[in-house]
Image (cartoon, rainbow, N blue to C red):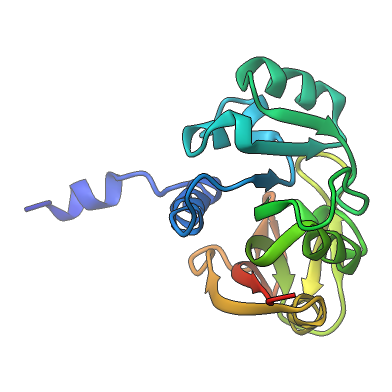
Length: 204
């Protein structure tokens, strides 16, 4: 039995470490799926890359950061890794079984455009795991991202509407930051959360 001191000294999982059980949960629904991952951060820094969960030959990754792309190609030989914006994906319609967006969509100001592309490339009944920072108030908030560029905190109601408008069914929604609400990159921001949505595309 753990003592109170031992329990307190245990490190909390990082936010990114909270993603990985969700990724496994989604991929367990398929047999040899074609997977699209919306950025190569994990692959570039060799932090639980997607090749740990799937055959590299069935893994497709896009990013706009050329340095990250270069590192990801070294760390994940065999994967299809391309320079591309998530708002204009270089893949055929109905070509993917699963899309993993692990807090990529919240680095662009127009999430509906990326969701439209995800719906386009997914096969009927394909799955989308979408992780995004949200704002619990009205409107979208933004801050300089700790990774460069901008970090957007979408109005949570608007984001759900964007998802549904593209023909997705939200099967599950989870709050990943119950103990970190209001904090981002060392700043206190009231009313923000990191949400995860498990979504299924319709039959068409």
